[in-house]
Amino acid sequence: MVSAETMTKDFQAYWPTDLKAQVNIDRFTVVQDPKQALQTADAVAILTEWEVFKSYSFKGMPIFDGRNLLDKQSDINYLGE
Image (cartoon, rainbow, N blue to C red; front, side, top):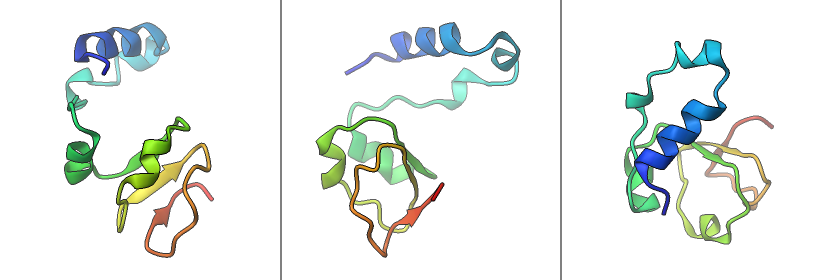
């Protein structure tokens, strides 16, 4: 698990300088359990090919599957198609 401190440093290191002034890092929440994050998330972006994501329930939640990992299901609201 990546620590909140490491994540913050990575975000700040890789954001373009002009974007750093526009983004409030305090708006990000780090949780230890991905299923906990799904309970309060407004949307999900899958950016890795981790198989574990296939076992999560995304019903009714807007989702961007950037790796085409999930099978297309009618009860998932896919973004970016």
